[in-house]
Amino acid sequence: MLRPIILLVCLVVWTTRASPEEYRLIQDLKQNYDAIERPVANHSDPVHIKMRIILQQIVDVDEKNQVITLVVWQQTKWYDYKMRWEPAEYGGIKMVQLPNSFLWKPDILLFNSADSTFDASFAVNFVVQHTGEILLAPPGIVKLSCAIDITWFPYDEQICHLKYGSWTYNGNQLDLHVDDEGIEGGHHIDLQYFMPNGEWELLATPAERVATEFAGLKYVEIYFRMHMKRRTLYYGLNWIVPSMLITLTNVLGYTLPPECGEKITLQITNLLSVTVFLGMVSEITPPTSESIPVIESDTNVSSYFLAGSVDERKSV
Image 1 (tube, helix red, strand yellow):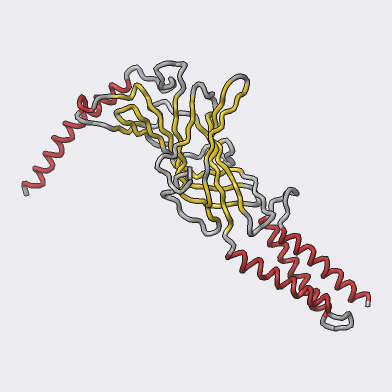
Image 2 (cartoon, rainbow, N blue to C red):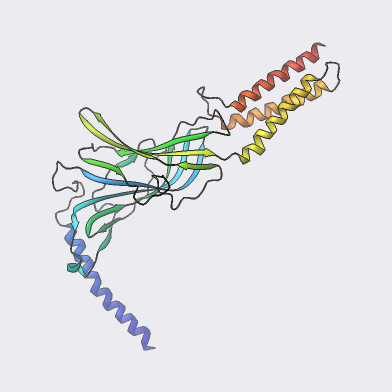
């Protein structure tokens, strides 16, 4: 009976002992701190930021609207010289979590976002180390625009990119770098939590840091590219095989003599099949003239042959 009471008293004593130290640490960190000020001792120095993208899932690839939906964690690290303390002076505390509006944070955005809110990341706390290192890793479901070329559908490969950069700071104020430390396999996107997609295979994820000049100022952007290859098993069974069968029956019907009574019935049936097949292809085809799937062109040619064959039979 007394044991639970003793444990409760010890917990209360430990809490009252630890809480004032954390409270005192937070109050000391708040002194002379402004979340608008860049965390550099010299205003002419840039804030060096390491950025890492942790890809969790490829949710959807919308070929018709040229939009890709991903689940990612946008992890950034930098140092704030005002967020340093000696753990021995604060009861051995080496790390604290602070609210999202407590510290300065970079205005890094996804430039090629296709989301209705543009920035769909979730507001999370800062993780602050006693050395001054700041970690911010908000998760989010992002939608990005990508020019998808489906000429060789369903045996196509796509290369899309996530373009990140500061919206207002130039390279002399904010310097972005790719954080690929510890990432293996030739990738530059962290895939340790990646869930494989049933339709797309992720081949490579290179990253590139690009610094361009505009109006005499340097601007830094980071491109995280995704090289994806479509898995063809589903489309081979449901698209390629029916397309080949339609083509074979089309050739068979075309070679039949005009006086054959079943020729027009076979060719009209094939024409209806081609029409339905073209409707299935057009549902995923983007409304553009830049690229037309080869399978669609082949089906169009088959429809022309069918129309000519039916017309030949009627003229006889």
